[in-house]
Length: 429
Image (tube, rainbow, N blue to C red):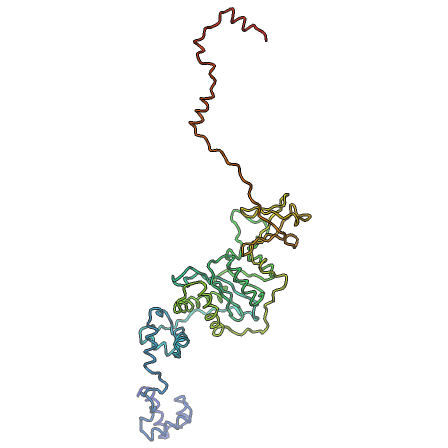
């Protein structure tokens, strides 16, 4: 009998002797009057032991079998589950091994087995969060996570994530590089599946934001957009730059969840390739995320807009540059010179600026005044073979061979008489 039972017994004795009413005893013990009547009847029947519940100290009828606990701990005792928490472990056991245990029960099992260490909850600083947007597709946060997703089992990969601000719906893909081309490929998949959102919310990475150059100050002129910035403008999608990681906290928290759960799940599945990681992400992780973590938007309207005929993604989501046509109807791109075909020559083309699109498949498309022009690569002209430079010795030898010999034996020749020399010098031609 503990102290609570003793306090109850004192109040029940007072009520039984008529020192206090049953209503007063119920108020003192914070019980209902009906429960006070039951306790008084139990005391009259079993004495002071009536204050204690009959099932105290007995095994619960709902207690799980010890064999089930041993089986679960044998599974989680594997080295690949060393960092699984109770929540993720409970979901994994239910999905893979058909062992359905609540996370709190599993937490107690893991603590008894030494697989989990309990800790007290800390009072964190209260942070006033920004309100969610009201409609699906009104704002989409976009970011890339550089993490050891395969834990050294394969190549280095990056996770590009787009999460809706109103519902927390996630669209993500693994890529090999955090580059403009890879991000454009993920953007194309998002647009084809959901349509055009109103705005994207990103950080100030170089693929989204043009950084001013210190040695080249801009004098009141706006900086040119990046390739992704230009593509968003052509798609009529707004862009917002976050000034800190905390500003786009929704996508940052999704990365924290993925770095904890997704890494462990792919480890359990033995995934070692980019293709396998994307397949698991699409078929297993994202559907589970949508079922567990997404919310209903405040407004049922979908803010995504469909792609129109003018939104040709293969010409928008590529590298676009401007080039000037020379007088011979050519332009240079990189190390190549391209010639516009004769039948494509148009008025105002010489000296004009054309749009050059470097498609993802390696093709080059040239557009002038809304129409595409056929071009071909100019073959470089054959350079004449340069003669092998002669050495200094050969140069000296050639000079020695070609030297005049008129001085040879000059001083050994007989000199002319004086009158002969005067006659020679006074001779007229």
